[in-house]
Amino acid sequence: MTTLPGKRFLQIPGILYVIFAGIGIPVSIFGIVSADFWDFFMPVNLPWATYYGLSLVYAGFQLFLGIMGILHCNNPAKTELLFALAVLNLILAFAFVAFMLYVSWLMGLFSFTEFVLPILFLVGALRNRSAAQ
Image 1 (cartoon, rainbow, N blue to C red):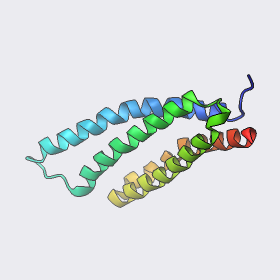
Image 2 (cartoon, rainbow, N blue to C red):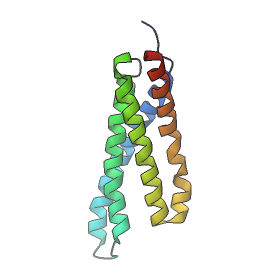
Image 3 (cartoon, one colour):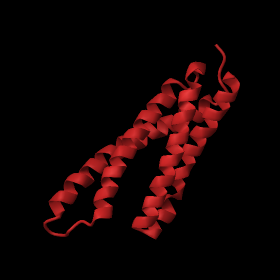
């Protein structure tokens, strides 16, 4: 069996996505639950409540993306699916950074590191896609 050229570019970000989503999902759930609890003491404004909900959805998508990247990193039949997921992930990363810039310019500034894994995943998907054709 031959190894596709983008295998490592899909596998390593996939592993990191699973790890980060494993941290992000419980933290987002705790944020949603505690935001409602602490509302009695300090009202939570809409952007932060929305942030926790969007973070939960984004972490769930990254968990799915990581599992797909790990399982299908060397499967030529799944190159188009991984490419579509990589493009969707990059679009979601842009949306996440734009939302963070809206909430706080400082947090938005630090969230530009959000593009590292989506770009690596996209490079792996592009390399596999060109090798499979």
